[in-house]
Image 1 (spheres, rainbow, N blue to C red):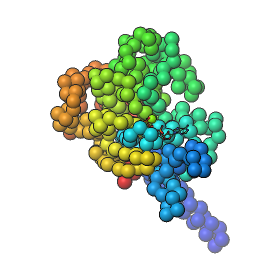
Image 2 (image 1 turned 120 degrees about the vertical axis):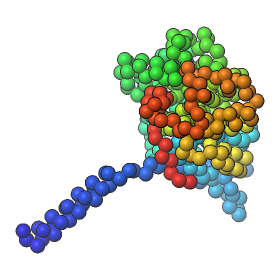
Image 3 (image 1 turned 45 degrees about the vertical axis):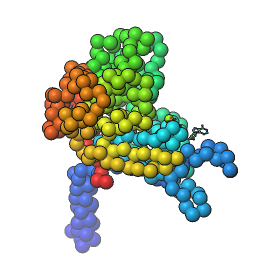
Image 4 (image 1 turned 135 degrees about the vertical axis):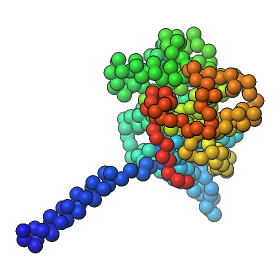
Length: 331
Ligand SMILES: Nc1ncnc2c1ncn2[C@@H]1O[C@H](COP(=O)(O)OP(=O)(O)OP(=O)(O)O)[C@@H](O)[C@H]1O
Ligand SMILES: [Mg+2]
């Protein structure tokens, strides 16, 4: 072999080895959410309302909001009325666009996407839960849960199977043929949760999900959200109730369009507070008896001792909802 050929062969071998090493190395996952210098303003000039503004420079120009959320985290966004919670949620959910700033969702710069691409991202990456449930009238629970799968082009038999699995997880398999007006508020919200998780999205985004529920139904829905997060699902939940925010691993407080406080209540990796130490958690709740009595989908808290992280193979939640492993980047 000529010296030139052998040098080429050496280089090709080195390239192949580098590519193989890259393929074998576990890929560091990007944060589920990374927003930088996010500003949302309504109106202009002196009449402008900066719904999201962040800190200001010396001239009073908003510098925008920075926020990073890792895979597997459970974040409560709190703040008084008008502080910018829904504005932030609408941008994180790709339902609205910021006035300025960047937003990477699961590593994708959503600022570069057109309307069609945005709707695909919403369908595949985000499960929405709203205060008012947003169910389709006169449509059975199982058909509601199948809807996002129909948009995603999943065939009928597979849709039915996955929708029933999701309804089973929220304890409503026996209500599959019920329409919204035949379900209680708490049951309707559990159907909405099943609909949000059936596509195995990167993140669940919930705006005041318990705002219209009584304390018993609130506990039911939060117990489901806790279990989903324990199974690896990233959760971002907007609330103005301390009792709800206690369930989160991290609490971000907005004041006047700025992040005023960012408190970690439990590590990103691991169980959320209510499952980490259920007895201690329940002893501080106003609805102790409800929490203890809750049996969602036939599963009781006592089956999931807080000290034992759930085994993804033993835990039906992980398998059935296609949970993602918790690997969030270090903060
Ligand atoms: N479309 C709009 N046009 C003008 N101003 C708006 C618009 N939407 C929101 N705002 C203003 O932006 C600010 C933030 O509103 P946002 O809805 O995000 O508050 P919030 O924290 O969700 O409040 P709440 O707890 O009442 O739901 C408020 O001052 C509101 O009046
Ligand atoms: Mg709001």
